[in-house]
Image (cartoon, rainbow, N blue to C red):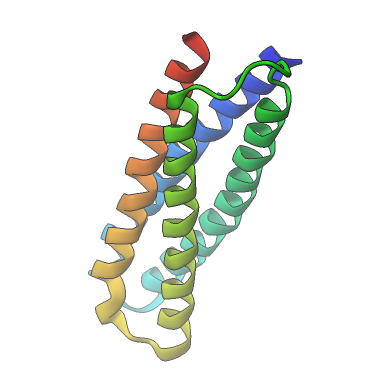
Length: 140
């Protein structure tokens, strides 16, 4: 069971990394667009964000499953704890990006694009660090 959870966990984090890269590229492209094209890119960003919600939920479910699957005498090693911190950061950045996107939709404030880029970059970097640390946590 631990092996299956580990594979699912690594796949979820890798998927989150890919989703954040796609979202970052979309934000960069949309910043200079107007009209229908901008609306289409905003729609794509909403779809990517909804899928990312599911991916982050999968990261948490598989991570908690791995934590609970530890033998009773073992405690998580330091790599696992640091990975957990990056998953929390990933989740926080994603949530703030979603809130910023919602504000952009409500107000039409296009000046929030740099903040969106920063938050999505935070998701991307956190996901990269989390996958590296997850591999270290379960190889040692």
